[in-house]
Length: 412
Ligand SMILES: *Cc1c(COP(=O)(O)O)cnc(C)c1O
Picture 1 (cartoon, rainbow, N blue to C red):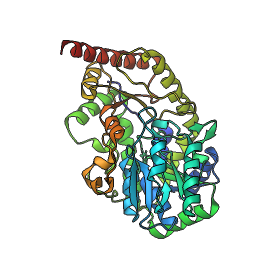
Picture 2: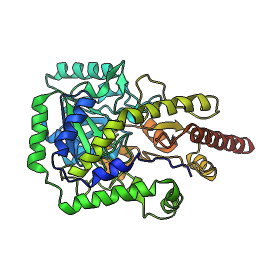
Picture 3: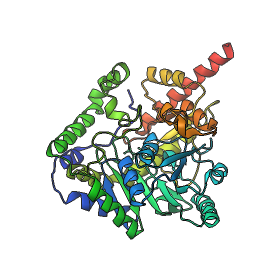
Picture 4: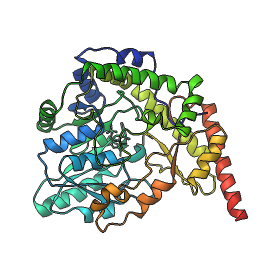
């Protein structure tokens, strides 16, 4: 079975996970900032804790935080748990990102933050986002912070410039399903030194050092994850995943199923071993990104003429954390592909305002595109295990699955 995702964990990462060098976190922050050309980087245990700390550092309470309806619910959780109010905007079917025409209407005098998400690594038109925000700032005479959600878009560029370097700060997620990993982990980057100092102050005040047993647990977790995704064991892993809930924690975003809450260890700081793994991964980041971009281009070519299949947007500067396509009957497509030895992923299976826990924040808004995306997108594997031969098998499986669907439709 070709796995839908596979963290690139090798011997160096496994060794790093067990090193308890307390200087590692500061080193990882400096190297991360250097690599992504930010003045400052501040590390956390999760992306959502990083966003929570940023919203606290901005001194916000009861502020409106505008975000896409189709994104990781952790962003909305961080907003609510920091005492603020998420405001959802529908996305566009052509790039899965915030609909810019609707964004302008969503900004009110209570808006203090806008979170443009560059979903699946596809950069938004950040020039337009800034224009819209500037207009609102002038109109209401107050600053609106822009937080680029780069959890999928490490390295993504809009017109040649990193989206993470645009106004005012950027958010990264580093769990094992992301474009690079520090086991768990999240990061804020910014060029604003005062803001960075405020975020650090929140971390120093509100977050606790990980316990020793925690470091041990993280090392065991990474080792098990590496084993579970290894070729000899993956058949078992895949079976366990489909047939039992035992392995959900390996690949599912952590604690995102129900309720507005953080995982129990969200308020701890990043551990030394995690930072060590992050440093090893950072050194391999460009290689992994180039591999994803190449793989995506090859899928584009191989799948161009498949009837009924909507391919990802072709936006220059995309870094393809995921290669997401839309299909008419997702469950059926995944079933057929699986029969052919290819596991297809489904990433965000909800539109946030339609989740019961967010019903009270949905307002009168309509989010038809977010709903359509939540039921029709699947992602093809782009991880380091996807060689040219694997890529062809994946493309063939997708083509075969789409063929079956079209044939069924003709019969029906
Ligand atoms: C994963 C993710 C986050 C948050 O990261 P966690 O580490 O899971 O809290 C934020 N935004 C998006 C789009 C993500 O995919």
